[in-house]
Image (tube, rainbow, N blue to C red; front, side, top):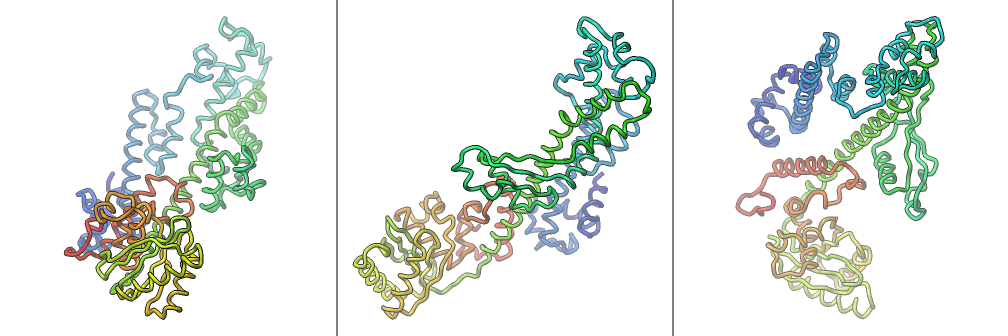
Length: 496
């Protein structure tokens, strides 16, 4: 079975199955992707990081698929309902959804209407309805033979038998596969505003929104999902359901002269409306969300990688400025090794008097410590702080420059245990300014101190699968650190 998996992955990546096998064996031994990519190239045939990541993900999926396949085969076999045709279909399935569709008729269910009808002896009547075996007579007269204390009328008998037919139709793997594909290609996701008007304001653009399922971009899926979660949007999948019912009725027709034809059509319509559509709507919505999560997480990973790989501006004495209005602008000066030389808080955006006082003090510090670069955080009051820095450099004729720095996650770091251990004598607000300065000096070394999710890598990062996001971002950090390398004698514990 492993050889089959290696062949599948090899075909997907356009590499030899033996390369896949070698990579999987190394991964199973506990080796990391960066280690394999760098130090085991001769074993894997020069497989790159991205290929190895894909192999790691796909082998996990295929192994889970195989485990589930064997569980389903064991369950159906134990029920003594396995057939050669069913076994062949189970062995040919390449997706978990295909396996689950095949298993649906045999999956242990809660007590359903069809189960109750079977217990009341209505299965023979259901066979007549489903298989078109009766072409003469009155349906209600025939149904009288099934009247009992539990089934008081012929109408009740036909209703119970129709429930059995509906469940059989709903459990058809062929119908589910066909309708899932049709709904994906022909369906629309529609939205309408609902709930609190104040929350609705964020989603007014979706007031009369409708878009084909197959064309929805990931960011829009995440946006409408957020609206639904907040109670501002009601989402629905719309499809030409009547045509699907007609298709199933025609496929099930064995004899057009059946006296139960109308009852069978009604049972098929009930199967679609009550059982099939709600289940497939959930499947399609889930698949849309999973695809959107996957695409968004990839983008977030690229954003984080670009952030971590920003070139360091080494050799500078840096003044970090963490802008603010009410509590002032926090300042920290670090030397070329990142050691803190001085710090404080100044009001740069209040009165002209305070601004002038701050300008004089900061200019003197820049001269005293030979600061060559100002790193200004891009948060609240960043624009005003930038104007202050520009004016100060010009009026004081300072030999330095300034740069705007992404401060996302600085507040998270400043309150962390790591920050307390590194800078125990500094206030939490000053630690943020130190981080903003160090991010310019060595972006990678400083950024790895922060939970990747706190760095701010994308608009919808809090809407996607958080476990998968964490896994991917951790992989990015691991890959980048191994790509850049570290100096063991000077590297911080965080980067090691």
